[in-house]
Image (cartoon, rainbow, N blue to C red; front, side, top):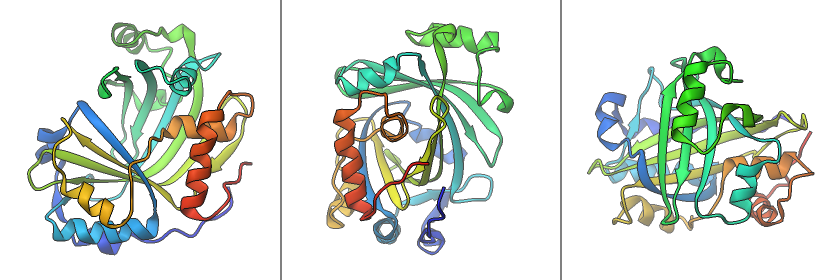
Length: 265
C-alpha cells in the first residue's frame, strides 16, 4: 500500500491515567449496545485530550497504550454474512479469528446482533498459528457449531484486517471506548488490498443507552454516530463482484471525512 503519514497519538495518550486488563474485567461488555463514530486522526488527538481532562483511563497492555490487532473474517462462498448486513437483516452474525499481536493471544470469535440492536460476543482461545484458518481444529469447529448458525465446512477465510487500537474506560467503569487507527485490509478472494488512510473508527460500548461523557466530547468535536462495519467496508472496497450499493455511501462518507480518495491495489 502507498505510505500514509499518520499523526502520533503518543503525547495525548500519555495524559490519560492507565488501567490494566485485570482492572478492566468489570467492563468487558460481551453483551452490549455499540455506537460507532467516524473521524480522522487529528480530531482523535483532541478527543483524547478532553478524555484525559474528564478522567478517562487508557488501557495499558503488554506495556503499550496502542495495541496492534490482526483479524481474519470468515464467510460463505456466497458471502452470506456480508449480504445479511447489506440487506438490513436485523439478526445477523460475524465469524472471525483475532490475534492480539503484542501478547500472541488468539481467539475464534462469534458476534451476534439481535433485532434490538444488542451485540453478543462469544470467543474461545486458539493457537496463534490458526489465525489464518481454524478449520482443522476440531475443538474450534465444535465451538463454532455450538455458538453460531454456521459450520466450519461452510466457511472460508475471506478478509484480513490489521489495525492499531486504543481502549479507554470511563471513570464510572460503565463503558469502554475503542479507537481504531491505521486500518488496512486484504481480500483473500480477490487478492486486492486497501487502507483507510487516516480515518478512525471509534466504538462506544455500553450495557444500555446511558448518559456518557464521551458522547458529549465527541459531539463537541462534531463527531457524530455512523453506522459502519469494518468488514463490510473492506469487502465493498476490495471485491467488485459483491453486491454493495448501500455500503458505497459509507465509503464516500469516509473519503469526505479524510478528504482523500481511497485507493485499492
